Amino acid sequence: MGLKVCKFGGTSMADGNVILRSASIVQADNERRYVVVSAPGKRFSGDIKVTDLLYACSDAADAKDMEAFEKTFDKIRVRFLNIEKEIGKNIGIEEGMAETKAAILNGAGRDYCASRGEYFAARIMATVLDVPFVDATEFIRFDKDGILDEITFELGAKIFEKYPRAVVPGFYGLGADGKVKTFSRGGGDISGAIVARSVMASLYENWTDVSGFYACDPRIVNSPKSISELSYQELRELSYMGANVLHSESIFPVRSAGIPIRICNTFRPEDAGTYIVKTSTRDVRENVVTGIAGKKGFTSITLEKSLMNAEVGFVQKVLSVIGRYGISFEHLPSGIDTMSLVIDNEFLKEISLETLMQEMREAVAADKIYAHENIALVATVGHGMAKNVGTSARLFKALSDAGINVNMIDQGSSELNIIVGVENEDCSDCIRAIYDEFFK
Ligand code: ASP
Image (tube, rainbow, N blue to C red; front, side, top):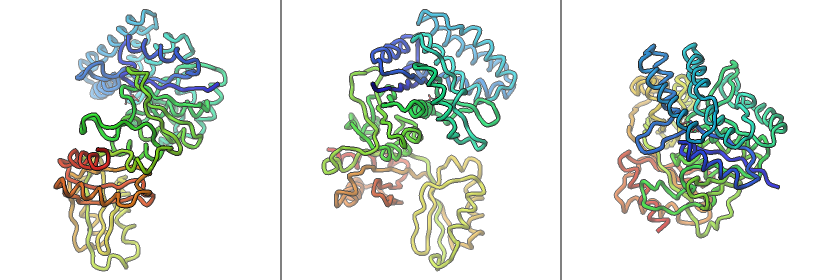
């Protein structure tokens, strides 16, 4: 018999009725033995996710703004009390909320506060399904650098041996300092993958509000083709570049064990969804491109210096400047006497672009240095690209026909992707042009 781990995202946990629907999905298949949940998400457009309310509570507590704290905390309390009412079972929300409030005000920390959405959601789901609740702090561990500790899988395997069925809160674990620590946003998907690997599941089902991955963002192209199967590598490229169906780090726990992931729609459970597997079986002759994704908000810094090619250690000096500020780069296209660094604008919140450029210029005595702000990166991804001659020619012709100016090109050596840099405002047109070329 197979063993499945199901992870339900925020929209599948948004209110009592949706939670009952999610629970019935679990009960419909006896192989669905472990359930991981997110905090209640948006019920309608304009609604606020519980996690966002919790972050607002933490900010208000830090700022000692008690009025804002009480108001926001009460919204969360009422939301969970309503869920308790809707599912018609006593979960002890009122008492739990009072304890949580005291802990936050006693300085339990931002991550602890943010984690409570998942904690209560899991307790609710465990009661509905009548299976044990296993807290994530019992096995998900982070090391002192905040990286997931490998011991997690051993601890997980041991604990789940005792529980043939369980519900686990997503998004958090225990830090090296003994305090609750969360993953980055959307990290419940990683928790689901950790449980799948701990129990060596035959399938990791990720239940969300879309029927899998599309060849591109449906907000950009009307009804794009859906993708029936993706490889782990393709998924990583697409989700890193902004296809936000699944957290981009979710594949790491399951990849080495070869556990497939299936993206399923809680609101259309009969849809096939997308399977994410080690090696895609899609016909690469027919499917040249698997998907296209884009992300805005990058800056490219270009340095020019005569005889740069012969200067030993040039790149290293430039990288040591960004390294000092904890900045990582996305791409590093180079010419004989020029090199560019493409970095995420998020990093430029901490340090000004001018200071960074000044330090780089001094570090390598550059002849010239200039920046191009507001760049979007668009990735065209697919194993089929390496097998089909003329793919990049088709892509660049499509962009030129659409009048889109490309200011950076990077093709990974595995030929799994072609990334182009365009102006932020051209991002959607760029995706549309590539989609039309390869999918219409
Ligand atoms: N609740 C968290 C968030 O909103 C984690 C998750 O949903 O996976 O980011």
